[in-house]
Image 1 (cartoon, rainbow, N blue to C red):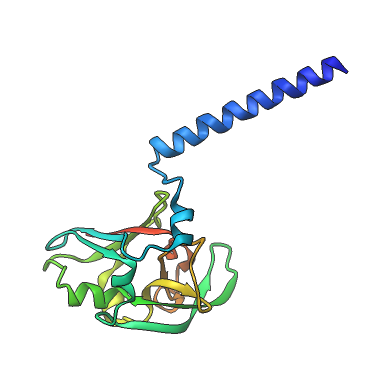
Image 2: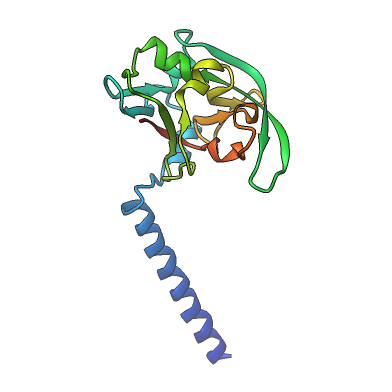
Length: 187
């Protein structure tokens, strides 16, 4: 019995140390905010949630209240066609703001700006950038979503990028649905 308890104790210590070092790694090296989900639930709308940077006139920061404002084109309860990497198709309903309307209203683009890339708070980004012309020609199909099925995005955000599959029919568009969107890089 004592030998069994000793093994349980050693196993617990090993697991505890592993969790400690992996947590430390994610907080320091990956710059993961351990309180992000708590902040999302509390819902402070005046905290900067998305930054647009790169080949832009000037770096631009958006709060959740900015994103929800009538200053930009709001997309309400629109159904998006989604296709994942293994070909599974489904439809999801999101509300959000048009990416193109933000870029246009704030006059952020340089003349040679041609692509954009979404980056999440955990460092995730799609394997390739998308052309800005997709957002310009289809402003209601490239959005920064803040609600799904009428409910705030507590676990996916506060903001999540959404691109309808119709715009990129040869690719899985779920790669561009970046949860907890933090940065949009214009190239």
